[in-house]
Image 1 (cartoon, one colour):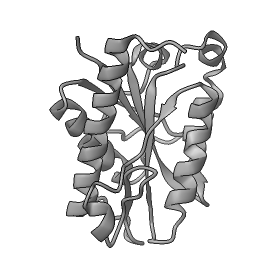
Image 2 (image 1 turned 30 degrees about the vertical axis):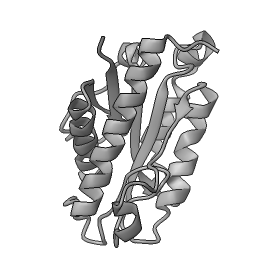
Image 3 (image 1 turned 180 degrees about the horizontal axis):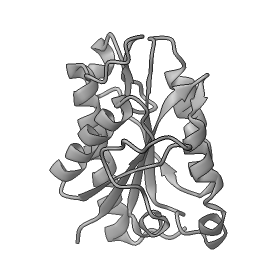
Image 4 (image 1 turned 90 degrees about the vertical axis):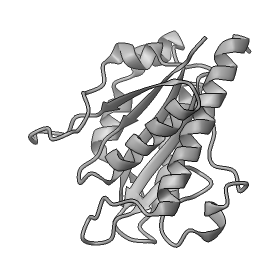
Length: 194
């Protein structure tokens, strides 16, 4: 029995997309299927590297990794608008007991990564999802000089908006993807109902 993990993100300059791709590799390394999907921007030409998400993909996934850049300590408006449009799914309880985690990128080291990750968890909690982060057993959390938090993978792009992930950021994203896939597989196999 396999599990499908939806790696869903909004990315403006490519940093969040780069994290999403590493997370997807981690998901696949753990034996699950990764479905990379983007959230469309507002009125701008879509330059996303992956197809736009369909509502049905959110419904059928077994786990979710959700990513957005930081906007003043919060998720981007495009990502918020996506969740604001999921009321029908919420009313049906379609995401209850599905494992989930969040990831982000900011332009500066103190650009609000952790505040954003915490705020991104709120719609997932309202949907009844099971949240996970990165445990301190991952050695990169102790040594990173850029992104990476216990709340989820992150990247610090700098003011030049460099989407190139550091080695520590890559390893944390891979570990996060593996952990999310393992949890998704375990929950699906057990048929968790509360």
